[in-house]
Structure formats: C-alpha cells, structure tokens
Length: 266
Image 1: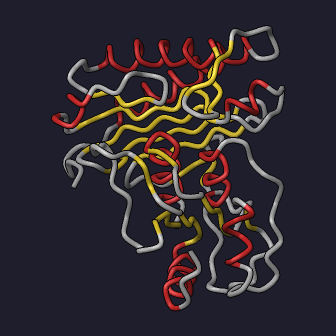
Image 2: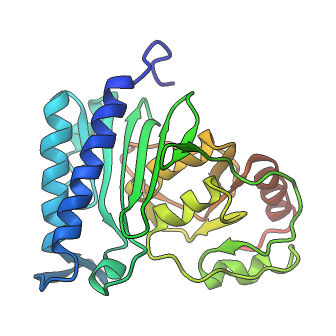
Image 3: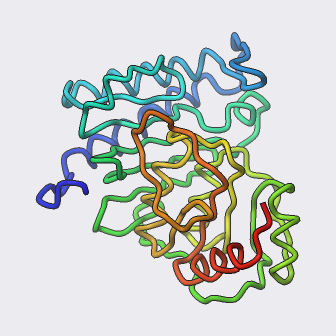
C-alpha cells in the first residue's frame, strides 16, 4: 500500500504546475505542421508528443531523481520495477484527435506509489477541464469538488465506450445510449468522476499511462474503475496492459460488475 504517512502535498503542487505548463507547450504546437509517424500497427506519434514528454520528464524527475518513469513515449526502463514511486505519463492522450484538430485530447500524469496512484492530473486544455486528485483529499475539476453519480440503476443513458463492448452491455442494461466517442481515454474515464457520464468503458488493451491518473480521480470522486473481476488495478508491473475496464459511481459499478459476471458477455 502507498505510504500512509505521506500526504504528497509537494508532489501535488509540482504536478499541477508542471501539467499546466506542459499544456501551454502542447497548445503552442496544436494546429501547426508537425512531423508524424506510426508506432506499432496503427498508433500515431508526433513531435508534439515527444516535446511534451521530454518537458514533463525534465520537470518531474528533477524533483526527485529516485522516482521511476513510465511513459507511452519513452523507452521502457525496467529499472522502474525496483522503484516504489514512479511517474506514469501519457504526454498527449488522444494523439489522433490532437493531430486532427479536435478538442478531446488531454495530458495525463499520475504518481504511483507501491502500485497505486497517489497524485493525479488529467488536463484537457481545449475544453478547460483540469481534473486533479490526491489520495485521501477528494477530486476536483477546475478546483471545484466533483462526484460520480450515485445509484445502482442499470438504465444507462449516459455511457461511453467502444461499440463492440457497449452492444453486449445493452443486453443486460436498459436504455444504453452511447455518447459520442471521446478521443482521450483518460478524459472519458474522468467524465465519470464529474458526473457527465454514468459509465465509461475501456476496451481491453489500455496501458498504465491511459488509466493511472483517471483511476485515482474517479476513486476520489466516489467511483471505481476495475477490470471485470472487480479487483482494483495495480500499476508499475512488468506487463502494463489491462483488460476491459468499467468505470462508474461505486454502487452502480458494483451492480454492473455483478451483472456482467452473472451473465458473461466478453
């Protein structure tokens, strides 16, 4: 478990200031002609991703060089596995949206301690949504407290996720009416934290950097994010890939996970 005697106040100030400055860098490159390439089979990368990644790494790691580093846009140094505290970073979550001139991209950063996020920020600068959380201190959006929706009803008029996942869910829930796709997975999950969505779903293949910050923000807003097993997510492991994820207010999340296990759909 994370160090119970640490309040993470210094890291929280550092993270908030650093992400705001990184957003200014990303905005300065937004809409310009950028060098781009493809990573893996189809994942786009641009020089903006790398510039923001380098900025975040320099600022955050200078705070304490002993903290590890795990980022979508850095070569994975497995020395991080020996670190109890690790920065987990997606410099631009939703690169495709960013390159297409859309608004639904974000910067997502969490500090993970002993496998669990303790400080987290997801900032969507185009829509001015600054989500922030510190373990034990609640979650905010633009410095105002936020809360996931309550209740256990499976009348899911406000849900977002991949069509391939939502179609099976519609067989056990009423009124599934998907919201438009949100380019940033971290932002999709955080919109459960502020009550904009009742449920958000991630298809199996997300990575630590997609989920760690949003996980804490949703948790501190009274919600939960888990795989279908219902077990809490753990971070900074050798394998950083996660299965299908369900995010919702705590009571609704429990009901939905139970329903999905009673009638397996995936």
